[in-house]
Image (cartoon, rainbow, N blue to C red; front, side, top):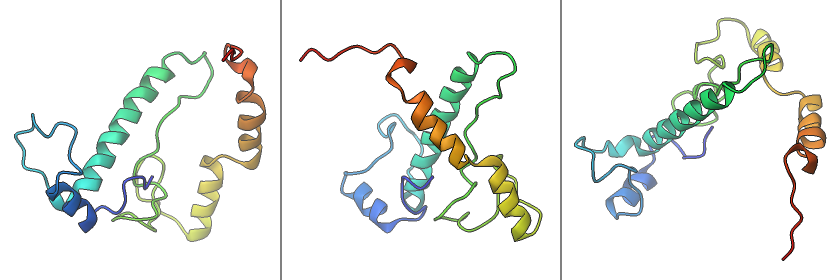
Length: 135
């Protein structure tokens, strides 16, 4: 997940200096901001929020349904210090060949069938209570 840019962004540092970017708890925090890792800190806060929400959602799953979880922020990174490295969804360094890692990815990432089901079954209006727009 690279929503926040590179971990050591100079653009983020300047945005912080000029007051455009900051931490959500900037006024309350006693800890000096690490300007070289602002994006990394924002990403970690975002991931923590996602993890908590997924735990809450998982509590309502039916018996026998798999537990839902958010993959580690090390998994399948395109930028930053973990970019291009082989990590598992749990954040452990993958020990195996490139071919074995590709097989692993096939076992944990959504398939074309999964994507099709998501769009054609779960995204139907009947999945949730639908209300006609009367505007």
